[in-house]
Amino acid sequence: QISESNGIVLFEAESVSGNIPRTIAGTNYSWTNNTGVGGYSGSGSMVALPNDGTTVTNSWTNTSPELRYSVNFTNTGTYYVWLRGYAETSENVSVYVGLNGNSTGGSQIDLPKLGVWTWANTATGSATSVSINVTNTGTNTFQIWMRDAGFRFDRILLTRNANFSAEPNSDFWRNQNIYQIVTDRFFDGDSANNNASGNYSASAGSSPHGGDFKGIEQKLDYIKALGATAIWISPVVKNGNGDYHGYAATDFYAVEPRFGTMNDLQRLVSEAHKRGILVVNDVVVNHGSTWVDSADAGWGNTFRYPPSGYTLKYNSGGKTYASPFDNASLTSAFGNTGLANIFHNHCGGILNYGDSTQVELGELSALDD
Image (cartoon, rainbow, N blue to C red):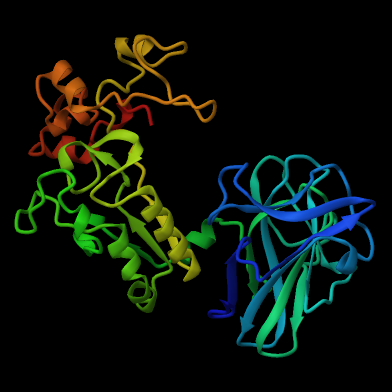
C-alpha cells in the first residue's frame, strides 16, 4: 500500500491497485505499463492505448479507462496533485484525477511541454492547482482517468503544501540535506561482488573495501533518520583495475561490477525515491584520457562519423560500441594500464600533486567540459 510521509505521498505510476479498461465507441482502451519512451522512473510508465487521437470530455468516471491507487493518508484536508508525464504531441497532453470516485471539471491536468518529461498540476490556461479533498484518514482510492488517448505518465505526487513545486529550481537544491557517500567505503551489502576486480582487501587503503549499491540500499532508513533528503554517490561506471573511488572510468556504458549490477543500481534509486530521498550521480567527463579530447589530432580519426576503427554507441537499432579504454588498448597506446593514462593528462604538470598552483588551478581552462 502507498503511504503518506511528512505530508507527501509519492509513488510510481505502475503501483496500481486496480486497472479498469473501458470501451469507447466500439474501441477498447486501457492503461498499459510501457517502456517505449526512455527517462521514466521505476519500471516503466503508464500509457493510455491505443493512441488514436480520442479525447474524453464528459462522464469520464464511468466511460474512460481508469487506474486506481490504494493510498494510506495520515492527515485530512486538501492535497495538491502533481503528475509527471510525457506528451509526444498536443493530442495526448491531458488526464483527469480524483479521489474515491469524485472528479470534477477542475480535475483536469495538462502537460505544459511536448517531447520531454515534465511535472504538471494545472490545466492549460488555469492558475489554480488541481487538488483532492481527503475527508478520512486511512485507506483512500486515488484515481486517474484517460482524457487524451496516448497520455503517458510515470510518477504522482500529492502534497499538503500549496507552495510546493515539483519542478526543481535553485531554491529546491538549496533546501536539500545532501549526504555524500564514497560507495566502496560505505557498507558491504553483497560480499559476492567484493573481488570482481581481483584486488579486494579491506585492510589496504588503496584497494576496494567492498561497499556497494546493496549496502547503500540497506542503510537508506538510517540515512533518512539522519535528516538527509538526498544522497550523492560515487561515479557508477566501470573503472580501470578496480580503482575503488570511481574516478578512473574506462567504460562509460557499464556499471562498476564491484558496486553491483544495473538492476542493483536501479533498485537503489527506486528504494531511495520511495523514502523521499533524491539520488545524485557523480558524473566525471574530464577523466577520459588524451583520447577523448577534441584538441588531439586523433579525435578526428577515432571519434567521428562515420567512425574509423571505432564503433559508436547508438541509442537504437541494436548497435553497440567497443570500449576504447580496455587494458589491451591502454597497454598498446601507453605501454601500461596505469591510472594516469586514464586521466585527461595532456596539460603539463596537472599530475604533479606537489605543485600547489597545479593543484589549485588544475588547468581547467584546457578541458572540453
